[in-house]
Amino acid sequence: MPEPMIKPELLSHGTIECSDIAATRRFLTEFLGIDVVRPLPEAQYLWKGGPWSVVCVRIEDAEAKEQGPQNHFKLSVATAAEVDSAHAAALAQKDTYGIRTVGPIEEQAGIRSFKLQDLNRHWWEITTASQRYYDEIFAKGEARA
Amino acid sequence: MSTATTVAPHVKPTQLISGTFVTTDIGCTRRMCEQLLGLECVEPEPGTLLVRESGHQPGGALAGQPYWVLEAREVAKVEVPQEMLNHWGVFVSSQAAVDAAFEKVSAHQKDFGIGRVQKPRFRHGSYAFYFVDGDSNWWEIEYRTPELLYTTLREKGDQH
Image (cartoon, rainbow over all chains, first blue to last red; front, side):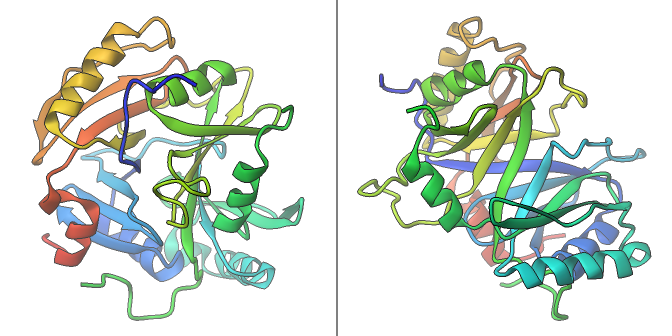
């Protein structure tokens, strides 16, 4: 393969919008268990487990844009039981954290997961897919190789 | 400085493992990610593209280090077009590298089906530019000085 035109050091970040930084932070830290820091008045940075971040930008005088479930972030948990307990918690805490939708638990190829839509209309997936899972996929290579 | 809540959260994630987006042309997205952005790609099944930074294969410079994955799914139509505030970013090593990347992206705009390419500029101390691909997915090429790297900002804790 030819040399790429750009040589990045890091796939560094994704972004989401929010309309209420404090309520969003409460959901992220208390419910999702994500780490958060706020270096700017209009943005907080989220992370879990590596140098990459999701930048959460506050939208002034408007609500965050509705996203579809095909644009979402995945959080890895250690066991299938943790997926189940997270799902039960999402149903129980919907009103507390402004969770809009809690999808059903699904299992595919040994990966257990469910999706939820948060107060800012973003989708999150709680999944047992881990870095080891992706390691194996990248090691295996192309489906049609 | 840790900014994690002191109360046990309801979900106990070990890693923010992936972000997802859609494309109407997985081949075009793959060529852009590999040939332009220098990212590693694999298609484990038809209609699915996984993307990570290069160097994580065994023997690579980043082997054994944590990474996250972008997952692209091929769709017939993009139902929810994305905007600039929903983008994916990569860090490069210098301001000059941002300028060089801007020249490359601009020169190969048509080759990769790229739409608008914004000029690099300073913002909050970082130097970066954005462009949008043919499926409304926005991308940022960014340089941050060491004091603005995410890991440094985490150590400093809340500033606001």
